[in-house]
Amino acid sequence: MSKIYRKIKQVEDGIRPAQTETVIKKRGSGLLGSSVIYTPPRGLGIIEKKLENLFTYLNQDQNYEYDPLIKLAVSHYQIEAIHPFRDANGRAGRIISILLLIQKQLLDLPILYLSAYIIREKDSYYELLNKVTTQRNWREWILYILKAVEETSIYTINKIEEIDNLFKNTWILVQEKLPSLRKELIEKIFEQPYISPKSLVDSNIKSLNTAKKYLIQLQDLGILIPKKIGKEMVYLNIDLFNLLSET
Image 1 (cartoon, rainbow, N blue to C red):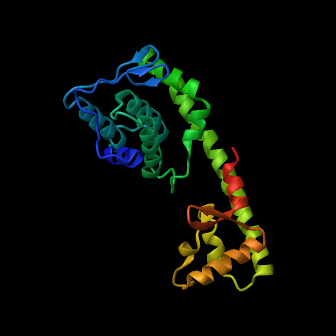
Image 2 (tube, one colour):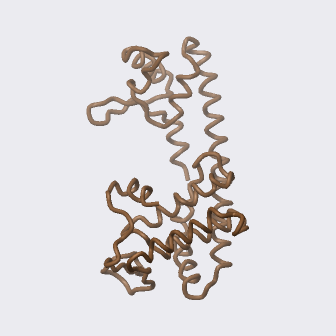
């Protein structure tokens, strides 16, 4: 889990040391701000032991025969409660949640963006986390997470279908107007909204000039829009960008 934290924060440290006192306040964690609502555990080896217990619960299905979505809800709370890092505990926890769904074969790819739902419903999120801590009210918390998974799944499926339709329509247009272009090139401009000429150079497109020519041709069809980032010219798949920007 420390690797996830270091990747998120681009730092070299990991589990917060025993002497580091962290508190959770109404407006976040730190030494300043509103009143304290929770004090995470600390002490030599305590955090490590609690994380070991958590991952035993997640990984040993033969001993803990719970539905993966229940495990997701429980583990998300536990990571927030243990608060193993100085910062980014929520982000690390959400990544663990997605990796859990992949491990349990409920997802093939990490495409379920639970953060959007949690950010939108953040008041309920913090209220229900606190209810588990103070009242042991697991029911409302688990229902909240199940609803987050359900709504995010529906949203994601709809978004994938919209992107798939956009790709099909784009490919039909290219076949009509630029029949010499390969389908692999169109697939490439759908991997992410921005693409640079040098990222197209491969075994099929061997020169930078050829890559630029193809991107300009797609620009002329209105599929791509040029945009300068620093000293480099990149091309924006504008319809894909707009789809991904919609909430």
